[in-house]
Length: 381
Image (tube, rainbow, N blue to C red):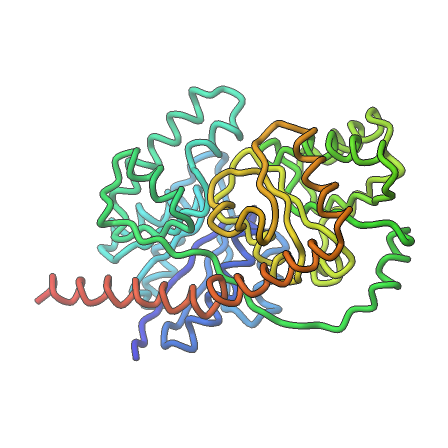
C-alpha cells in the first residue's frame, strides 16, 4: 500500500460535475493509501461542501484578474509544507497553475480531462480567436503532464488529434457512488407544484453548451400533444433568466419549473419519469450516470462520451443535436410506453453498476498513481 500525499486542484467554479467526481474520489483514494489535500482556487461555497465531507482543504484566493502569479507562490508554499508528492489537476484553470508548479518543484502532475477544453474555451469567449489561443496553450502545456486521464474515448481521440501522445493518455470513465435513499415522492412533487403529470428533467448549468433551448423547443412540441408533462430544469448559470424568458415566449411557462441549484438531487431524480440531455458537447456527464443509477430511461444528444454510456434503444434513445422534432419524438415515445421506459431504466442501472461506479474509477486512478510513482523512483535511482 502507498502512503503518498496527493494534492487535487480545482476551482471554486467547478462546483457540480467536477466536484461531484473529485470529492468521492478523494475519500475513496484515502482507503487505498493515498492521503489527499484539496486546493480550491477562489473563495466560495465549494470549500464548505468539502469541509462538510471531511476533506482537508486549502483555499487560495485570486489577487489579480486573469493570470495570477501569486497563486503559484501560494501553491508552492502549501505543497512544501504538506510534503505533497503528486499534483492532480481537474479543470482548465487548475491545469495551468498545477502544471507550472509541478515543473518548478519537479513533482509529477496528473491531469484529468473532463471536457473538450478547446471547444469549452471557444464557448466561454465570444471571440473564437481567444478561445483557440487558450485551447492551444492548454494542449501545449498538457505535454508537461506526466499522465493524462481522459474520461471518455471521444476525449482521448480529440487529445491525440491535437498532438498528445497516445501512450500518455489513459481512459478512465467517471464513476459514482451507489446509494439508495427513501424519498417521499408525493411531498417532493407537492412542494414543486406537480400533480399527476409525467416529469421530464434536465440537470446542468444553464450555459450555451448545454443547449437548454433544444430542450425547451422539444417541450413545446410535447405540450401540444395530449400527454400532460411537467418539465424540470435543474441548475443555475448565466443563461437562466434567458431560458426563463424563452419558455415564456414559447408559451410553456406554466409547464416548466426552474429549480435553480439544488443539493437534493436524489429527491429530484426520484420524481422524474425520464431524464434528458440536450448538450452540444459532453465529456462524460455525471448527471447522466446519476440519472441512470436512479432507474431513469434517457433521451440525449449523440455527442462526446454520451454514446459510451447510453446504449441506444436499450437504456435510452440518442438523437442528433439541434433537431427539436426528433428530440420531442424520442421523449414522447418513451413517455407513451411506460413499460418500455421502466425496462430501459432497469437496464441502465445495471450498466452503471457494471461499469461506472466510484470503486471501479478509483481502482483505475490508483493504478495510474502507482505507475507514475514507480517511474519516478526509477528515474531517481
